[in-house]
Amino acid sequence: MESYLMLFAIVIIIIIMSASSELIIKPPITNYHHMQMIMQWPPTFCGRPDKPCKPSVNMSDFSIHGLWPGNATGHTPFTCTDPPNPTTVEQVWLNDRSLKNFLGLYWPSLEVHWTDEMLWKHEWKKHGYCTSEIVPDVKYFNGAITFARQLINMLVTLKRGGMDPSNNRAYNVTYMKTLISEQVLKDKIIDVYISCDQQASSSFVFLKQIHFCLDKSLNTFISCPKSTATRGCGRGEKQNLIFPTRVRT
Ligand SMILES: *[C@@H]1O[C@H](CO)[C@@H](O)[C@H](O)[C@H]1NC(C)=O
Ligand SMILES: *[C@@H]1O[C@H](CO)[C@@H](O)[C@H](O)[C@H]1NC(C)=O
Ligand SMILES: *[C@@H]1O[C@H](CO)[C@@H](O)[C@H](O)[C@H]1NC(C)=O
Image (cartoon, rainbow, N blue to C red; front, side, top):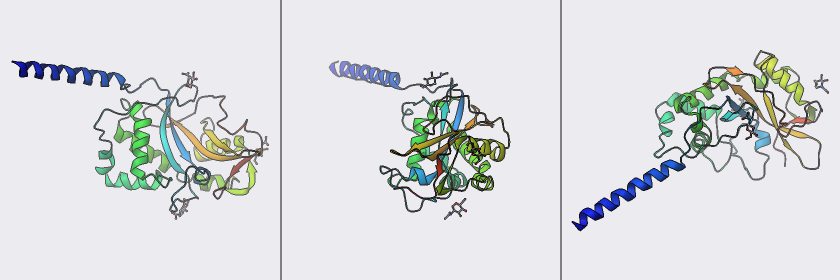
């Protein structure tokens, strides 16, 4: 009899524990406005003293940082708590060899202490999982590659437009945005965001990331919403944007 009571108590405790752990898991969101595909410029990222980069990083091409849900004013405030365990997101690339190769190519982890898989998993847990009701994991990773491939000639196009990476020249953000809309996306009404790293004691800013906005279910580029945020770049007209070629120290 006593052992039945004991068993009953254990069952009750397990039920309470699983109910409360469910309570702290934030459900995926559907009320986001768009997705942002963030493309980073490695020389700037790798210039941060707290983020040493792998020697293998290609310093002369953009790479994916992540795909984040954004709201109607262009902010990316969504952080979901970890997906319910066990997470099976690794299956996405384990099941698709060719996808994994593309992820390695377009979405490498730059940081020395992070494997590519760690980065993909982190981005999924922190951002992708939030919107997984609309964009399931397979679609999230395949979508990233589809759009990265559409941007494959971005650097060549920027150079042709007069924006060569250089540590000795400065550009303006407005010009870069226009070049990306008109020449890379070939649609002057599609706006992107640009983010910069500021250098203390200097009026120059360094190109950090380009944010491309996508519709909620990752079908197409859309215009990023009007936003007053300067993302570290200043107002845009000043000739103070450095598109660096090498890691600054
Ligand atoms: C780095 O990227 C550039 C631009 O896409 C490419 O031409 C070059 O071959 C790449 N270098 C390596 C080592 O992959
Ligand atoms: C978007 O997120 C930002 C930052 O959390 C917030 O200040 C802003 O009010 C949000 N905008 C909308 C339209 O939800
Ligand atoms: C921004 O740069 C472009 C190209 O270099 C130039 O034509 C334009 O006048 C600049 N805009 C401002 C406000 O300086």
